Length: 434
Ligand code: SF4
Ligand code: SF4
Image (cartoon, rainbow, N blue to C red):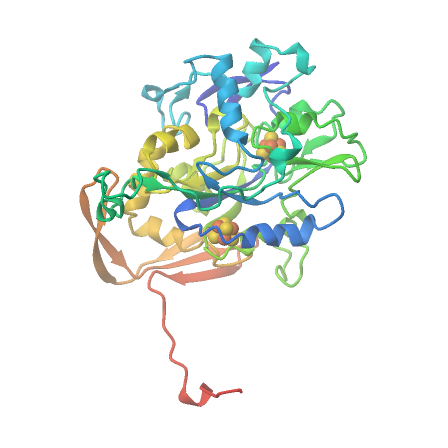
């Protein structure tokens, strides 16, 4: 195997192919704190791409309730258990090695799925480039199982747990959250590494990972290898399919949305009711690092402020989906899921300064991809007291700043103020139409 640098792990790791990086990389930030589990994103994707025969149980975008839900069921718990079994007690992070640029979360000292397959081969499953498993048909059957099911202490008079105590941030003792998921268009895709037909490729222009349907023979090694289980098998065509990142929109080919052919966000992003989603393209340097670009909102949130974190970075695929973790969930659960950057991210998000607050307004402000933002300063309008992750209180100053977003062509596509403007309709408009 080749040695490739994974910035999320803060070290080199084994991967079946040598490093080769795109010019831009498709990436996104989901703010879990805002997701209401409405599934509008899920249906936007389904009605665009997977409404055909044989795709009935295929959900490229899904939203699951954690900790119990999962699509396919148990996908993450099963793989975490397999990694633990391969490397007992060794799946740990060394946070003392943290370095803002090279190792923002410290160094992962455990085994990735590629390293586990290399060091503990399982010949009974045939050749495996990555540690993985093939979910059963039953596990794919219920995409929204355990919806809104919480865990934690029970509300009864004899537990000593009072509802008032539960309602306090930073951690609830009874909790669940919605985890929206799509393919992460990983930097080191396990699906691509696992395919014996070389049918999967990563586009050089935007890092989107696609399956060449004419080469695929439906061996399902990609389904087995993807740790996020974001490749799905279609029995009617006997091929595997996956999220295509709505590439015609990315290419600016929808004139209704992109009159000047500037890249647009995917359907699931554009449809998001909770305004939890922001998608972008980040420029990649030849060595695979993200080019310094602090005016790009995705770069700003992920690299500059580190308020959004990768999902299960320890798997080793360097996923390009990032999440602002939910404030009310036990930290041990979040750290397992998002790595050791959780405390820092929550600290940033709980009391955002005026710049971060302005950038957070760009979520769902436009369907076109924002490549650059600018902030115009406004007057101070409020002071609010907020609860920090350690339970302390802090006073947050709110300024009515304006954030402006520009598309790839440098055209203004979004302008949002911190204070939501109100408009009063003239009385003449109050016409009863019935
Ligand atoms: S999330 Fe899975 S399907 Fe998507 S690129 Fe990564 S390994 Fe491949
Ligand atoms: S549309 Fe947005 S708010 Fe609704 S489930 Fe999807 S990600 Fe969550």
